[in-house]
Length: 254
Image 1 (cartoon, helix red, strand yellow):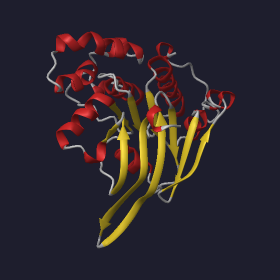
Image 2 (cartoon, one colour):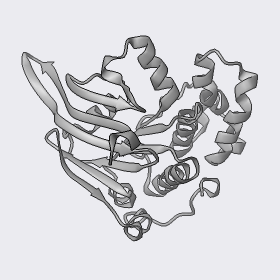
Image 3 (spheres, one colour):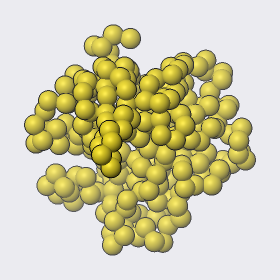
Image 4 (cartoon, one colour):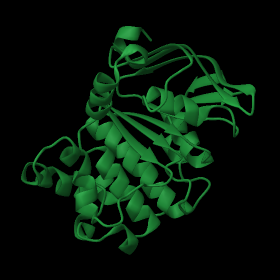
């Protein structure tokens, strides 16, 4: 894949930390390109560097050395204000823990990224309600996080991540706290978003069913890319439910 067609280009990315007087090398020279509209799973054992790589791609952390280009911009050399602007315009995040604000309802949580930008609620609310409907929560918009199930909370977090129409969606263990049936629904939402919006999606996961369903899987081990596999379409979606019960997917995510 040429760099010009890639939304993410990482070159010789290294990341180390100091801990109790020792240097811990977490990423040891990662080379990775992710094309516009791709859907990629990042897998590997604990400690392989998966979340660290995702955080570096998402500009939440800075590599010790190496280059990362996001949507054509070299992010490792951007000043903080421009980096924050690029992150807000281009990247959406979904984490294992949804990080919803408990004092606000689902609609208000989805609105939050736009409100932080200083845009009016009136301007944003139609889109926020449409996103909640897309993730199957049309009738739960006024419920606070404490009144929602774990799967519903994660769907609110997904809608929030899409609020500013990011080109790149990064998810770190998005089904880590969910049962298998709910995980299947979240899987289907990711596929629907990728297909309908052409959003590039990168998912770090230990979930074998989700990894098996991905068209591309990058395996990390000891801070290196061990394997980078692309899968035939026939080997993907049918694998998504093999480790759990087949439940109806959220219809609006199809």
